[in-house]
Image (tube, rainbow, N blue to C red; front, side):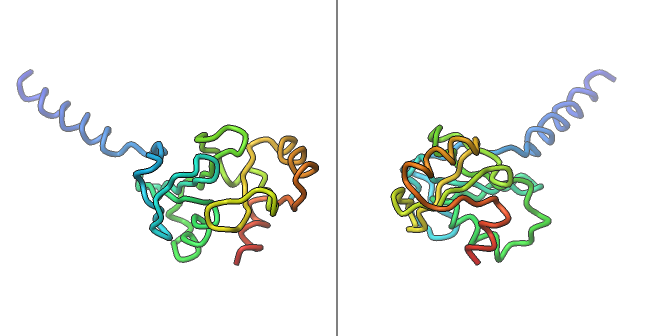
Amino acid sequence: MQIQKKPIYLILFVFLIGCNSSPQPINYGTDTCSYCRMTIVDKIHAAEILTHKGKVYKFDATECMINFSNDFEKSKIKLYLSNDYMTPEKLIDARKATFLISKEIPSPMGAFLSAFEDKIQAKKLQTQKGGELYTWEKLCTHLK
């Protein structure tokens, strides 16, 4: 009886591991943008979408992620993630982020768009560099 249980546990374990639904690290210099196909090299402006089924789409900039998602069924998306400007390579929940569009901060696709986990930090940089602050919802409307 015990011999038969082991394969069942092994199959269950493999199934659970295969259903892991979490963000993946971006391999800078290797991964390509799912929207524009450029190699992702900018550690400040990269972004990622995670679907409910665990599929990950990587982007060289938040604006590519937004453009990509315009043609994607929104109900399938679990997370929108953007790199935090203040902590390069750190992916943050884009829906909760504050965004700054400033001509003084170039981004890979030319939208001058940066994401901030901390709204206070975004406001500080805005006073130094100029530009306009956006929530996720306002940003998506602005970029359409």
